[in-house]
Length: 412
Image (tube, rainbow, N blue to C red):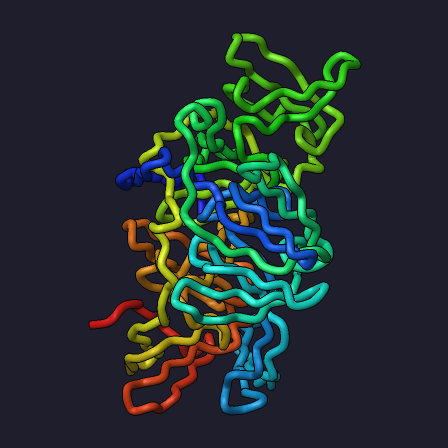
């Protein structure tokens, strides 16, 4: 797909701002953190040094117990060489194991630490999910839970000391909102394609009070994002930074401004999360977001089961609960893929339909009217472990990728 010809035109839909008596909702994580030493801290939370808002994704692994009826299944593959088609059948194991799992923090009621590498999530509908660490969000590799306690100020709780986090709606005073805001703007990549949404720089900095680190003319600088109007990639090892004062400086020497950057994450409302690597990045222009764009705790529910109509390549269809890739079963889970080498994560709640496009890709239609082509993961290619439908009679139908045609989500 030509990215220039298919540049995304993202329309940001305004949602009503929510106000509480104490002040305006800020979209910030808020709750009560209890420790093993029976200490309790309450206030705004920053999780693992970068999850800061209710729509941020908690990443983990979840154990799957081999959900399909068979321990293995056959998968037909074929290639064409010099006009001849050669086909064969592979046998794949369906025993399960740990699979990637993610959920927006706004859907959670609590997180209970269970061990040095595991936790139990309780959703808003009291569903409990046991997860383990696959990165730094869960487990001993967590970089700390920072609480802006109302009485004590900033407090950091290590994973080993954590007992439980209970989330709740929280408010921020108007003067605090004026001093600190969420990073927002338009990120443009090398071919002119742009994405407009909330930004997490270097997969880390996301607030106007966070700083951009770098060296300029032998001096170490820490520039608050509140003072930055734009950042442009100058080379693999440097960036030009345009300041609100009108000055432009060139920074280098840190992973904020070179190819060690861990990704410019853009959260596009009603679309999904896009991660742009430094080699693809061209420019970002910051703007201050409207408070009406902020999603607060009460804007999230616990999600629900995936339900839809699935067609095979013969035109037969089945309707019922859907299990995607023998794994995802709920609207709060994510479809992962690559869009022209950019990593994309789309919540199933935002997906209208998925159609098999080829052995290596799928066409994904979103509720906002956009359609994107994804490839590069087992969610959207012939490594998919099966699309399952449980109909109203309790029958379980399974389609391999080469048999699958499309699914349309939603109840009739």
